[in-house]
Length: 85
Image 1 (cartoon, rainbow, N blue to C red):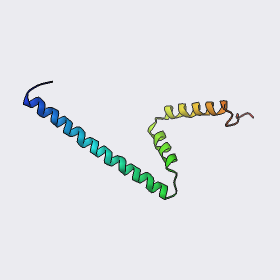
Image 2 (cartoon, helix red, strand yellow):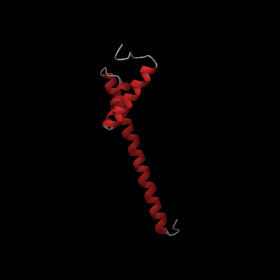
Image 3 (cartoon, rainbow, N blue to C red):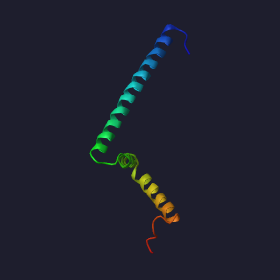
Image 4 (cartoon, one colour):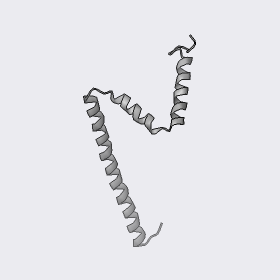
């Protein structure tokens, strides 16, 4: 690490930027919580909405793979019947 004033100033600038971004992240997180609360107040299930948001972030092949694996596990546990039954 540079021991000059320039290095110190650069480090301080990095720290300041990180702290500002952390504050913004906290504010955005609080905004998201408020939207979930608003959705819940309108009669929607927040847990299910969170799941939909998570699924929408996945690409199609990843989502299909997860769904197939879930079906396999549910069949193995007898929680859903086999299609041929």
